[in-house]
Image (tube, rainbow, N blue to C red; front, side, top):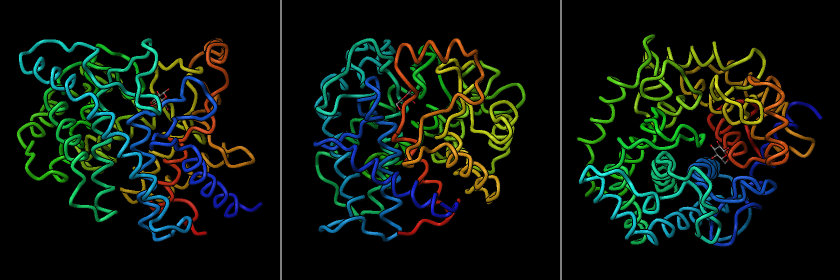
Length: 382
Ligand code: BGC
């Protein structure tokens, strides 16, 4: 199979993995084959729904019906999120009130990072308090609404958007787990980027919401307290360390423009420390999860960044690497243990605990569609 045919196959497989994996009721499981990932995350789903919205915008109707299957699938996911949030309105209101009084959050009243497909919470032993996912969901919803020419929004969406935005505006300074579900006692710059984008998006969706003061305060905070001594964005406040998730602060969350000098320095350090030549992207230097391998979705995320700053060759190299990690059916994993930052012992330990690395990882497939639809690799067509 030539490279182009292989790319087309992975693209088609990516759409199929997403649509086949959607559960009745709209949830997308993060990975259908790994028990710990058989939940629906706001964050993963937000990128998945965005990928479908981009694909639908390109004008291809995936299968017959009154609406493009991509748009319908994304709408069902957004419906699912709105239901999950609205069902917890009382608890969320209590969190907002507590934050307004300057009290620490009570975990049971915060939104989880992931829920079961039926909207129920998963087992208690998960680092569920993560604010970035809700922000990224609001961002994705606004992107969807634009492409689906939506307004007026369903009332249930408007309620969920308003509640989620008030929650984020009240909680943005509260430490939480980051998008890798780590370091629950820190304030993470990538999380602030997602909250910022979520608030901006909520005002686009519900014009009566105005968060100008809050978004300006978040941006000031990041630039005052979220930098390393070298002038890069820091992984978390007070750390002289970068994390590949900082790409998101610009693409897609636009707290900084992609070509802002701070962003350029951050990406340069990610390249130096987290990108082995010819390979994928590591999350951060202390990563031990499955040995701290090279992440497919991060290679594709960085490709997306490079496409936005007009560096096509770099993007294409990353996309080609990601494609080289697909299996014969076109399934993409979360990461590959080649190279690893940590010792092989960590890899074996995680395999013992959870089984093999997640594959197909639906978020990886979403990032693949996004990178291709943003103009990288061979241009998709059916
Ligand atoms: C990652 C999260 C992701 C989840 C499901 C975790 O291992 O750290 O970012 O949301 O898997 O894909």
